[in-house]
Structures are given as C-alpha cells and as structure tokens.
Image 1: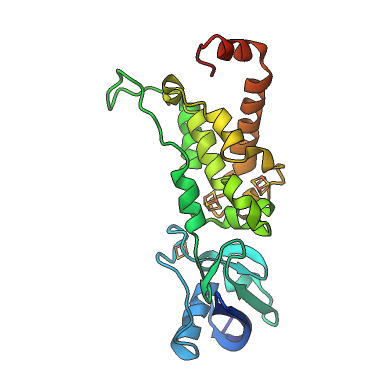
Image 2 (image 1 turned 90 degrees about the vertical axis):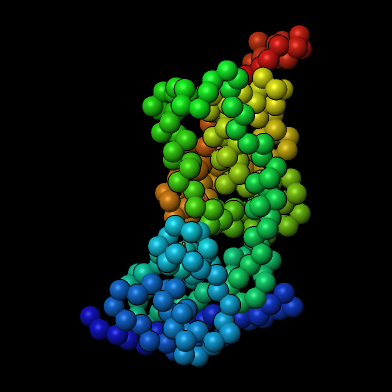
Length: 256
Ligand code: SF4
Ligand code: SF4
Ligand code: FES
C-alpha cells in the first residue's frame, strides 16, 4: 500500500454561518482522519479550527461527524474508507458552532453540575469501603467514559430539538445518575435525595425511548442503554408502582 490523494469536504464557518469546502489532500499508510485535518492545517488552511489533545482516543476532544456519523477523528482510520470516497467532516450537530470543527459543548458541563455527586456513607472511613465485585465492575464500565459527548450529540432527543435541552440530561449524565443510584455505598437517600425520582423529574429519563443510538457511537464501547438507562428506568418504575415504596414514602420512611 502507498500514499494517495483523497477528496475531503470540511465544514468551515462560524456562528454566523458557513459551508463545506473541498480539498484534495495526501494520505499515507496508517493515517487517521485527524492526521489529514492536521495536514490541511499545515499545507492549505492554517486557520482551520479543530480541537484535539491526545491523539489516542482518551481525551475526548476530537469529536466530529465524519460522513454524518459522530466519531473521534483520531480513532477513525483512513483505511475504513474507499480511496475514491469523498470524506465529509462536519462539527457536532447538537452543539453550537464556535468555528469550523470546534463546537461549544458547555451544555454538557451544565448537565454535569446538575447531578449531585456521590455521598459517602457515614461512619465508613476511606479504605474501609467494601463492595461486591459485580458492583465494582458496573461502576468501572461507566467510569471508562472519556466525555467525548458523541452519545450526547447523536441522541435524537436533543440532536434536532434545542427545546428539549433544558429538561434532558442526555445519555452520558443519565448514566451518571444510574451509576450513583446503583452504587451500594451511596448515602444520598439518607439525606433525602431520591436519585430515581430526580432521574425522572429533573434529568428527563422519560424522554429516552431506548433506541440505543448512544451506545452505537460510544468509542469506549460502554453499553449505555442496556447497562445504565434501561436498569434506571426499571428502578424508577419499581419505585413508582411498588405499593410498599409508595406506603413508605407516605409515612416518611426512606424509600430505596
Ligand atoms: S437510548 Fe435514549 S439516551 Fe440513548 S440515544 Fe436513544 S433516546 Fe437517546
Ligand atoms: S458514554 Fe461514551 S460516547 Fe458518551 S461521552 Fe462517554 S465515552 Fe463518549
Ligand atoms: S485527540 Fe484525544 S480523543 Fe482524539
């Protein structure tokens, strides 16, 4: 295999508008889409704006849409495309453009702040936490998240519906609620915080109709829908319809 010339269309513009620009660019063996974007910067478009950091699929910065699919540019090998295929690179559609391929992902930081953090159990010191291995494994799967926000970008609830954003946390942060709600040592309920109720009432769990699109684009392979969103929905429904939970809430006892 040897180098060849590829045809790229790259979105250029800013909040005021923009469009696709055509480029012919050299591609060498083993390169990824981010290499090509860097070559464009080096040879043809020095002012092309792009966000990246690790080039190893770990920082979550280089998210974009490649041929319409949300992907990490640094983890998308050029070899997955036909040599005569036109490759289109556009910014994440669910978030406002800053310039070229850079979007303002501040929505996600707002949603992150809305999820109350882990509440340590009383009387158990650091190093004394004991959990079943399966509980550790569950958390560890969710903790692989690199916050690339590809799942947030692809979710149809907000992708073309700006009006849903205030009421919907998105898959990444519903997963965070699920992780904490299923954490055996989280003491939020002792302080009166019902994470299942907040999932429904404040984070918009009901908007999710388990299409699994978020899971399909996750570069970490996290089973967001099967392992976080569906279990959270089941737990929230149990809470609502379990007569003992209902009675407990009426007589002021803690409902879990
Ligand atoms: S499964 Fe739910 S959160 Fe994931 S993309 Fe579909 S609607 Fe959005
Ligand atoms: S859950 Fe996956 S797709 Fe979503 S932000 Fe985390 S790593 Fe990215
Ligand atoms: S540059 Fe870090 S994930 Fe792509």
